[in-house]
Image (cartoon, rainbow, N blue to C red; front, side, top):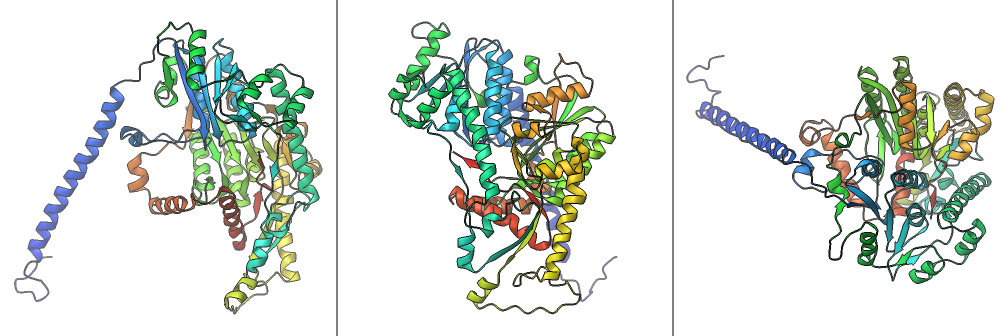
Length: 612
């Protein structure tokens, strides 16, 4: 609308400001465009420079250390500007797979230093090392200090070396269970819960008891027996000893490096230079020649397809890592990853709708979580199967409770003997804060309409009528949803599922015996089965395509509507990183428990199994 001269509502410099703003916007837009073009150009130039040159007779050096989450999406922008990216467990498996067929790589060196993986992944890593060794190439393992898990991984190598001043703590297994009722009592907080199968579905026990119940003792002892058998057998087979001798060695541990060499647990109490000198001799290096070492960070730049791998028909790979929750996947505030129903459902739907995708491999490393989110993921898998896409589940360290809920609809389930699975059960509850509020001098007054309107009051325990309602809700989720889905997926009767369910935790070995698992193996076994189900040639590789596709840096941080929430969560996460791990673990469980006050049922592993 034209502005009349002398209009009292128009300031004299309004038009001038408008023109200035437009000019500034244009300049800003041009500068931003040049900035984006510059970043894209840098990435393109760095990509065009070429992949690292690998010399003949090289040694691939892999660091088996750090958190090692199952999968970490590679950020091209971060790589271009030299930002360090977290190493993933599946990346290590990929490097071993490439090195096996790469004629330039003649050996692998494992630098083992407190990897943050469980016993399922440790077993899978040993299998991957054994597969690499079928190429005839040697594997050396080096440790500065070796605990049970570190040494277990190292036993897959041809030779094991320990720093001269290092120690080997192969002194048996100890399973730790933490309980917070004493702390809650001091705070005046009471956890009120309902659980299906109270003997085994004892996740709330951390907040309602001060010690293990009979069911938890039974399960943990069974798991320890299974792990200890696998552990002693592996040492006996690789170090050429009897199982009885290994048990005696464990009972007399720990050992200083020279002692460990003397009794045959390691091949050398050596410095890295001494170990490398022996490796050079084995590989035929001449005097004075430097050992050609290729580090994993550089070797990642060698494309798998350049070695004849990861090509052919496309198979979708979807990772479900962390506790299960509604919404988007994210890094948990108190450590660990969270798998969100929105993210996973969309990934499954996209893979199912992509006509070039011949099968789906769902990699699960989750103790469970929200029953509703788990059910949504189950339905997405069901829809994918109806569209003709075979679905194979690969279980990592743990796929239990909600993690098993989503797995049970797969065509095939693959797990390691050491995988923790099962825990078919449900619990609901709420924190009762009255004691804390009384101590703080806080009073609550409720005005309600409806007989059960106060069912989630934080200051009051459930009345008998309210508790009866919540018991009914819990039973419906367990008997009408969870049990029938497992029965249909595993071709078992509902009675049998309830018998092996009720929150009972099983190892992969026990799960296979009970019909919860189809075959033993890791991620590569799942790929092999997916090829069979999709009628793809067994002797040809497939292209593994990760869903959802990793988002570029700019999209994640500038266009994502949830970016502010992600940044806030990241900031919180950085604040709690300084806390001891046991405290962070307690906070993680409290965060999940907090969800229940809104009526959310939980299908969660009864305990976080921490075996040292």
